[in-house]
Amino acid sequence: MDVDSSSPSADLRGAVLMAAFSLAWFMWAASSLQPPWRARAAAVGLVLPAALLALGRRTARVVRRDGPPPSPFRVPFYRWAVLFEALAVPVAVIVLSRLNLSEYIPTAVAVIVGVHFLGLTAAFGGQLYTIVGLGMIGVGVAAPFGAPAADWVVIVSGGCGVILWVTAAIRILAVRTALASGES
Image (cartoon, rainbow, N blue to C red; front, side):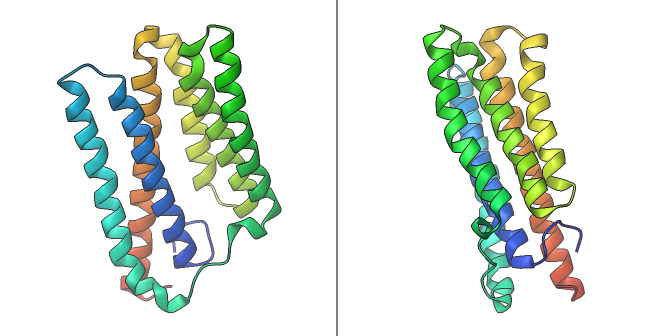
């Protein structure tokens, strides 16, 4: 298989999580737009992840024969990556809000989530998580240098949504291809 983990079940679970989180990023981008673009972006942000989640669900029916994937929380580096993200995001939001630097919240969140993905690389190996992490960090850091502050939320959250959505699509299609070729 062309994906990083050891089982189709684990690959599929990761893809479904990425598709679900892409929905959150897309909705954050849509919420910062003005009508009628807000509704249009929200519709696209709902339809794209929903399509992947449906495809992932159909694929899961085939993958179930492998049994459930092992819990990633058994991998210490994974636990640390998730704990870092869970603590760092609210702290960054609070600190930036209190310093009247709220426009930097999308950048901070993207960088924190990107670093979390680098932790997943350490936990599970492979290059996919590294690419996702560096992509999210890059989108987060680049926005303040290339666009007015009013556009940062759309650029960063939309960019992170696209990164996660594309990665989820790649993972689901890789699992489906492996299953079709009998590789699993």
